[in-house]
Image (cartoon, rainbow, N blue to C red; front, side):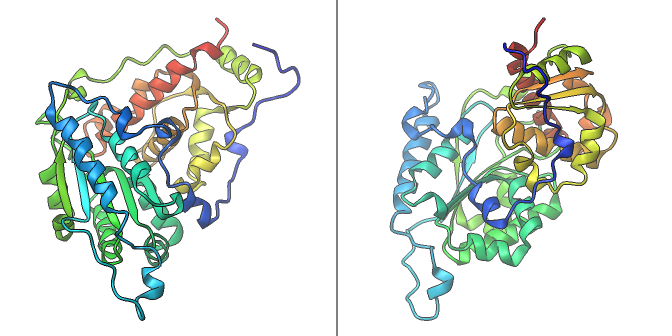
Length: 354
């Protein structure tokens, strides 16, 4: 690894991205790690027939969207006939546990739908709520109302307020002919009670349930494996050396970064990492409160989506959140953040000179 000499690393704390609304919507596409997935790259488990069936059903669903037109409905509604809707529900809900490939299938549906990328949107539930926060409800309806398909990954069932907000948004979009596809997490308190959540999902979205066809995908449930063991942190010196030796790396102290995240809207966390090849953090420690923890979850998601390795000193990532947090209503999010940061920490090992 070449030494970069006097060229220092960047600091995320020095960045205050301004993201236009057009970019927020344009970035609602499958994350880089799902750029190349397709239905024919999904490898169904031969012992689980529902996996192959899911591919068949979703392929037909995407093909059916080719003649179902939502684009421009708002502009022509006064002088054009309402487009003929495809028969059956205009939404599909992928129901299954970890490791069965729900996100792979959801991204494949996005890729297979016969519409240009500007007429399809893909994002997590958190990204969708952040979009509403950035644009406002009415502007979000207007912006997404011309789309043919909206895919929502990891629909959050643990925040009643946000669930009502997104359900209201989806109701408006369905009225404009937008097709929907979703996966969800599991409600708090039910992590060990089974891997399927369709009943919870359909109940929480209430009036929208008739628009969704649940599609059960059986397979091994990875929740029972517990949290992955986080790799041992590096020293401050090793982290700094890696930051200076890695082109495009950032270097921040963890407490300062947490404070900076409070000043940046979560919808801009992706832009915060633009051009960053590795994130280097010193003095990682337990997160002090829930608001800070939830912001860190969003950042972890954006880093994971972009496959940005994380080099860190301080405490291991499996000690970021208190036991009270891990036992609380947002524990699913915290488990996901630990898992993703741990994976990125493993990816970062080649950057550090032992």
